[in-house]
Amino acid sequence: MATLPPDDDARIVQIAERTPNFGFLLEHDHELVLLGAQAESYVYSDPNAAMYKARLFGELLTRLLVRLTSCRVDGKRQVDRINALHRSGVLVPEVKNWFEAVRDLGNRAAHEHYRRARAALSAVENCFRLADWLHRSITRDATHRVFLAPQPGTTGPRPGSAADERELEKLRATLAEYEQRLARARELYDGDVDRLERERLAREQAEHELHQARRDSESLQEFITAQADELEQLRAGFTHPGFAKASPSQRDEFIERAQRAARPPMNEAQVRAEIDQLLEQAGWRVQDFNMTNLTAAQGVAVREVSTAVGRADYLLYVDHRLVGVIEAKREGADLTAAQAQAARYASGLTNSQMLSAWRATLPFQYVCDGNETRFFNDLDPEARSRRLFAIHQPATLARWISEAEEDRQAPTLRARLRRLPRTFLDNRPLRPAQERAIKGLETSLAKDDPRALIQMATGAGKTYTVVAESYRLIKHARARRILFLVDRNNLGRQAQTEFSNYRPPTTAASSPSCTEWTGSPARKCSTPPRSSSPPSSGCG
Image (cartoon, rainbow, N blue to C red; front, side, top):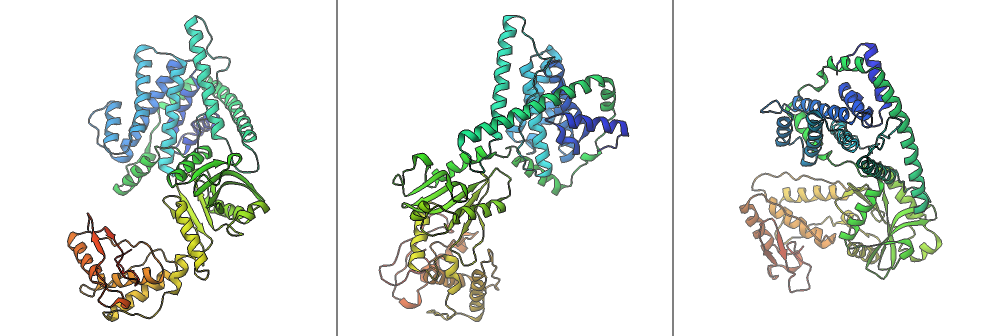
């Protein structure tokens, strides 16, 4: 970013402090702040100028992106830059549409003298979306920003004809929708407040922000009007060395972030809707507290239930027993702190909740921000949070409960991994390297290491080592699924042979093969042997 003379720099800072929607761009580019603020301040006093400034905002942003990403552009028009950035992957379709909308309205303003306030408001909103997208693409900031629509003041539109009156009514409806959107975004779910009180507090917060935004907008318009000539001279002298060309690796990283940043972070209300969908997809029946019916399904998730220490976002019931809790947070929130909150609810049950609880401390604890879900199983020997791709099915939790009741000393897979036998029985004696590999792997598993690497020479028997270890995990740790993944068909056939020929130590060579391959060699469908002996490693 260019260094400005003190007076010019002070002007930009004053503008950034007054604009409700573009001040956060100050750390990226001063001219973007100025153009966004000018467009915002002209929405009602001069809608045509607002759309024109919005077009300049979009054009400047595409030029900066082209320079940053070294994108090749065939042509000098804005549409050429937009299409080139889209082809290179910088702009996903939604972001491309924002640029196109700003360009189209700017062209109408420049060539047709179009001056409708609602159209100007839409152009400024799309500039805000682009600004927020740029900021999150560069900084990874997960702040949930909401467009604060400029409010009409003394220079706002006035009805003249009947058509003007209809347009003014549409504008009022649009502003009311913006206010409702802001209130939904400000709705907070923490604390012991019911839905009606929560909505009232959110409305009050939205009204306060809009009142402050109106004051800032009036101050911004006065400042820009008073210094219009100086600001135009200032804009003419801007340069942008801060957007220097990125290295190939930096370019790829930026494009990846830009693609993710197309979707704004979810607020708490949106996260709740996402969690409801995740639960339903996993087979849970989601219910409100005042409509609780634990017989409706095997798994029932009850929203917003008061415990002895606060209001839990969801309590989970499996087979009529209270077994878990979910704590929901806005996207980007600290899930470590949320995990501590979930643990507090899991151990802070009321007396009536204790009567239906499987354990005094609910073992299955989830935290979710709509994008990331983390799980904490209090039954594990050294329980710790881990990331999931989805919430577990009720049947899975029911099975874990059954396993824990059957073996209280080792209630979970992680616990059973710590007591694998140290002796190695096998129909075919293991080589020293194979035995060392299995011992090393099981030492890692016992320490809950998430990853382990076995490195063996070619011909040392790697596949048989994995087959033998698979049997041990199924037999002694009660593992249910083991994925054996290969990247070539011949390796798949080799693995099939080893699994098919393997015989558990207790069955000698009498057990029939139980392996049946379908489709890819890396995927196996299995049927159990017809004997009462433990299943072989191919029957997982």
